[in-house]
Length: 256
Image (tube, rainbow, N blue to C red; front, side, top):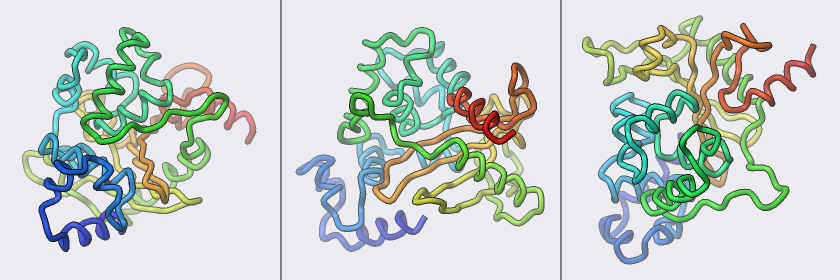
């Protein structure tokens, strides 16, 4: 996460508070700062606007994703739970990605109009409008093969106790450092991987199965996926990237 450390160094040397830059020049004022790309600028903008940084809170498990999504106009408890159930995401940045790569509209209750409203609200909160894919141009994300490689590497290192541990705030009354975290770069993408610490993962006893993988590229375009062991259908027993099951099926067919 050297990009975030560099950004923190830039902000610490500014002659005025970063909130003043946002007030005067909005999101583009952050992007114009040296060493701060769009992804990091979004996180800073969110912190200035809401007093929270969902990416950081997701890593430490210190927030309630249902309450977070309920802050969005038009999303109540039922839709918030559906987002988590169907997409396995728990941050505003991940929701923004899902809204733009067509995954959100597949959830019951999300009409095209509601998806557009969510996109507009997130653009206001996270700063700037992330452009969607151009006609006939797929939304750029790491390939399923690459995500599964990160998943395999993380689980191997976690099993061998070769990863540093963090102590999540949620569901951890003893403050025990039990959650392995891995940072790795592959093919121009930078990944942070850690087991899911959501209420649903604990309820289903999947805290050592569901793997949340955050990623960003050198332009700091960010996203998130969850990898799980499939429990039904033709992919039963296989590691699957939630929301990209068709690609996983094609990948496994190609390597047989």
